[in-house]
Image (cartoon, rainbow, N blue to C red):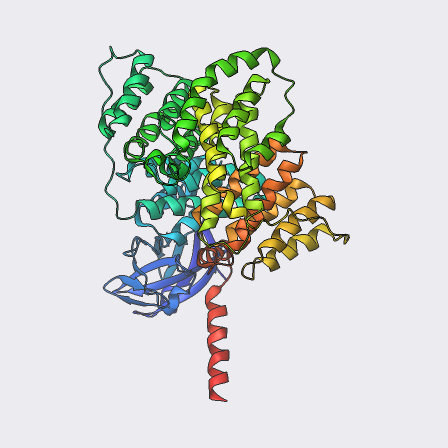
Length: 595
């Protein structure tokens, strides 16, 4: 029976209990500790391998290196430091000899939270999913604000990818936006996916070295905005970056910075299939969560994307058989006057459903005129953009599975672009960004053939089911391929039956997170949730969730390998003995083969 001499020293064994070159496992103060006697010295370490929990007393020691016999992780027996970063350091306990007795110091480590923050950073640096999962689970279990790990991922992604902002940081920001909609137990999984996406995006990439701001005299924000647009026009990434950094250093407000970047992002049509404006909006949303003191490095990381973006006026689809560019150009000229006329009529516009029908029609000229007409009738910039989001959601909700599979992404790009314009206008209702509303509407027009034939919005069934049964039904649907229409119908029926929208969105979020990361699926679910909040209480809100559920069902199930990694981390955190399960399975398999 271990006894205490003085806290936190605990008697572990007598010297004779541990043979030279051998080990002894003891239970001390709630810890399972293995004491090794190697080359005449005594060492005590946690008996659970920090990688996946295998008993280290079943490992071997050579030249003071302890090797776990499950995945061959190696540790310095004296310090616990690992030679394999994917394994983490093993905890060591200081040993004191008092006569022929071995005493162990079981004092709690100084700062476990700081250690897990460090491990999260190392997990991103080395792209180690299991390390990331374990760190995030531990941090949130210790009541760490999710904004902390998010900020670490934002800083890491902005500085460790020469090409700048990409899918990884966009995924991280989407996950941060989803957190309030998720059940609390799913929030660490969302952060794990977000940080993992950043790590994958940066793996093997050279770091990004930022440029200095212009001298302090360059504080004229109007001029800097004009310069930025000029540099983007001629694809000068360095000039564009220096303008962005200078604007931040000059004290530009978040609204001024948004106005500047959104103007540059809409000087050309539907840049990079909408990704550039979506990424720009996500950068601002990321700063809202991670802190605006990171604005310089985060927004500067956008410069390369602005300079290299594909311009849709150079693409055939936007030029033939109908040349959309001059139609849009004429409409842009009319935006200021339309806004001025409608200023006195705001608050009374209610023609959104009729405008959606006009946007889904087959006449781009009428589409542009209808948008200008809505502004003259008093539609705000935000209301107009929200209506285009509704039309874009309808394209996905009506999408027929007889289309090529890749066409899902064509409709998705329109929807996420339209949503980004909408969110951007809620941040800064600038006339230049209103051009993005027209671009989104033009893309809705180009997507019209994806609804030929058109799948109708599901009608509610007469069957009433328990909310928990509906949630199980969703999981079962997504266990099978291409249950697209059934998933849309489930959303309609769930809302009709009185399931709380928050409960339904939490179920969709959980279904999203159990799949392997798919950038576009994450985008559509996050955008649908954002639009649901804007359109709550209207049929448009239901259509947004139908669109998200259909897209998710089209892309499920995946291999779910990332989810398996997360589950391993979660079970280890709970103290489960995974090695015993693996050994039992091996025994059963051996017996089956021998029969």
